[in-house]
Length: 477
Image (cartoon, rainbow, N blue to C red):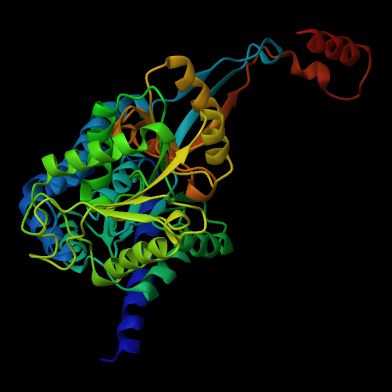
């Protein structure tokens, strides 16, 4: 069978599974809480029972991925998400009464959450378990059928997902399709009832265009350059390790990793020294260190080398932090944490999302200058503020726009189930996590129930004095 035949088979399977799930949804348009809980419980058991297999598969796909980071950043987050949904499901499913204005009394209104139908999820390579199953869990909690297209850049993990989902779920409930960009393009062009995509802004544009052909609503979780603003009153001893921990988790291959730091001129050198000390404390070795993750493949590693050389050629000072001098001893893709001092907008590292352990550092003379600079740039997925004064913090939060914010730390707003997570502008559209996931994958249907005692008949034609009197009254309410 040649490549063309393979593609034909895969696309035929996509069409078959989509039709299967549509038919299944037509027979069960509003699954009970018990059915939804059962599906969520099976998803939870899938992760718990096979955690070691997923850790090993992700490690092999990356050529070195910290097992601790996989367990914390992938398995635990999926489990927390599912357990939260199972507890909250009766409340989320309940019809929501809304206040009815006096002008419509004695009628009443409510919002009825209703499943959408068949949901498509396209997940990325950097967190191949978490970013696949967290949106899937939201779709299932909302009563939908779901189809998942995981990334081809992590083939072992994607195959393992397909295998275990196939064992625990009927294909009419949840199905996984593995394949390359040809499948990805066809998947994005499928007439889903909602399409959820996590990935780069560039690919997100293609996905949005493909979905628009069928008027399929989309949630786009993209990326961008998430800044860390260090205020003049920031505690550098507390700031540096928290900045480093967020930057180097998964070797910076995180869509909400701090992408660059903006620092007062007077604090730059002190912050650099504390960053060096924090790296040495967290990762005394790099190459043979199982706690320090590798870059996913050689193409991405080469891209990072290009960003460094481009910045160097344009006048930046490059500070590689390799405490034991062994970054490449175990893997050519164990990339030393690198500071880029004197970063400017003409450098590629300040235009492209980094997705690696490089941290450009800009300086500013006044907070007004820093805020104006950030506000003029594309809106990021995340923003990090380090500072002590509440008034200054609140002012910066008002004057900057980002998908989400953590103050005096990094990444943690993502882990808070009660906070919506999503981008704004070029960093994405729509949000999920917790109840927001349920709402994203539901149609929140507004319903008005008219009363038998309604005086609305006074507004019927033929129009006369009764109409004029009631209209005048309604205008005064």
